[in-house]
Every structure is written in structure tokens, then in C-alpha cells.
Amino acid sequence: MHFNRKEIVLLFFSFPFMPSSMRASATLVVGNQTTCPGATFSQIQTAINQASPNDSIHVCPGVYVEQLAISKSLHINADPGAFVVPPVFNQNATGLSSGVPIAAGILVSNADAVSITGLTVDGINSAITQCSPRLEGIYYQNASGKIDHVVVRNMRLGPGLGGCQSGTGILVESGGGGGSNVEIVNCSIYNFQKNGITANEVRTRVSVHGNTVTGIGPTTGAAQNGVQVGFGATGEIIQNTVVNMIWSPCTDPNTCQAVATNILIAETDGVDVRANTVSISQVGIFADGNNEIVAGNQVSNSAVFEGIRVEGNESKILNNSVTTAGEALIFVQGDKNNVIHNTLSDAPVGILKVTGSIGNRFEANEFDNVVVQIVDPVSPAPKVIPER
Image (cartoon, rainbow, N blue to C red; front, side, top):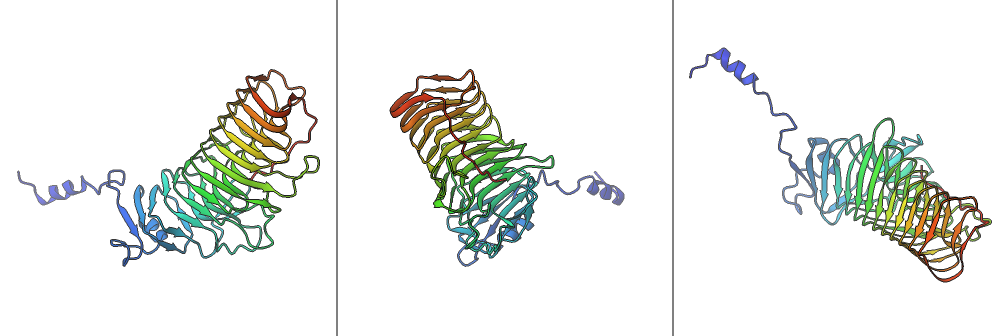
């Protein structure tokens, strides 16, 4: 077959460059070339900038002194001993619901399928000298993906700023018509100031499972929440260990101005809270919404108020083991809630149920070392302070 010159030119332009959707993904390697053979980048952000969508970035052990921003689908896989330690935390985002300035160690925005695995994100050098910008370790803003085996630590402000509502390990948020769907699994989050994990706003969904979230213990600063899902966000909180959230000034339910919680569901419906181990707080699990599932949790050492507190309708509080609470082991306010097959021990009251609530079922619960099993309370409500 013979082609003339004109036909050859036309044939060439009939087969343009392969589109990115068909291009094989690449792996970019970041590290010190001496200790990490094959490394072509010394900084993670440079590799992010050079990567094409759906590429992978392999991060070798080392300390990476930088803030990261991701706005394309990427897979970041780090070896043990890879630390992201920004020299300072500069503002790199604005909160979608609050409008407040945010400084995030890793900002993921307007991107799907962004996975982060194996990194340690450390806020030890935040250098923030006032309540604003708000400090966040990892912030998914209108973005989706997976955070797996990540450590987030030291998200705290400096001396004299402990009362600022700032310093959270992981924040997932949606707004402006966008959405976020993030899986957070097998992570360790500790030494934070406000919340361990926060997921907020309509069109946000999270699956939070297998994580360890550890508060700073008794504090007069910000009242901590270990895991928060709120303000229209949905999802599941399953098989996490969440401990050590105590706001020190709260010692009497009649004068308490704020409480710390292990797990907080704030003004949202249909969240699944199952098989968690939570301990040491003023309220172990606080669910403010309808159609919640609170099942199979191990809840202990809830000072001042309750182990499980549900305010809403048609929720299921099933098969929980709740021990040692300052006021009651379970509190229920609302209609048509099922409180069934719970094991309740060591508190003045087993179940407090608010007068006027109708259609609630209290069946097959076991009580041990409880003065009063079920009673209508006259009790002040604890004041939770969610992050928003």
C-alpha cells in the first residue's frame, strides 16, 4: 500500500496523543537519593505539582518541612518514618460553613479519589500566635478519598491560646454545592486541642473505623470532642477507640458550662455508631438527631453526666455495655426510641427518660449496682461545643 505525503499527514493527525484517561499511571518517588534509590523529587509538593491525575507518589522515610495542597486525584503512599512537619502553618483555605481562615498541614480540595497512606502529620511548629487561622492537620474540602494508617499529632496552639476553638486532627467538610466522601481508617490522632476527627455539613459522608483518638485529658482550654459528625453530615463511626476528653471546670451538672465528649453527633440524622470503645469524658456518646444507631459500644467512666445521651426520635440504643457515670448511664429525650438489651452498671440512675416523650421502648436491659433503674429526670442539659 502506498501513501502520498498528504495522506501521511492526515493519518498522523487522525491519532492524536493518548488521552489522560487511557495513559498508564506513573509512580513518582520522593526522598533523599542517598537513602532512597530512585527518588527524583526531594519535596512532596513538587511531586504533587508534576503528577498527572491518578498517579501515585511514593514517599520515602524523612522529614518533609512543607505544607501540602492537593487538587487532583492522587495516591500518596508513605513508608514508615515519613513525616510532614510544616515550618509554619500559613492560611491555605477558608471554612465553607464558618468563613474562618484555616491553616491545614495537608489541604485536599475539589478532587476525587485522593488517598493518603502511612504519613505522619505533625503540627509541632505551627507558629500560630492567635485564634485565627484555625489549625487543622488534614482538611478534605469538597473532596473524597481515603486516609489510611496516618498519624496526626500536636495540632495545638501556643501558650495562652488553649481556649481557642482550634486544633483538629482531620476535618472533612462540604459546601457551595460540592460534596465529600472520605474513609478514615486505622489512623492515630492525639495531642490535639479541639477535635480528633470532624465531619460537617450536608453532602459530607464519612466512614470512620478502626482509629485510635486520644484527647489531652483534663483541660481548662477548648472542650474536646473525639469524633464529631454534624450539621447534616452522615456516615458511620465503627470500632474506634476514643478516650480521654475531660473539660476540667465541669464538675457539677447544675453549674457546668461545657462538656467534653468521646463521640458527638451534632444536629444530624441517621449516623451509625457501633462497636466503639469510649472512655473518660463528661458524655461518652452524645447523639443529637433522629434515626441514630448506637449499638454494641463499650462506654465507661463518663464523669458528671451520662454514658450515652440521645436527644431525638426513632433511634436505636442496643446491646451497649455502659459502666460508671456521674448522673445516669443512658439518657433519652424524644419519641419512639428503642433502648433494648443494654448492660448498665455503677451509676445513680440506669436510664433517665424525659417526661413527655412518648412511644419509647425500654426492654431487656440489665442493671447492676444502680440505685434507680428508670426515672423521669429533672436535670440540666449538658452544653456541647461542636467544631463548626
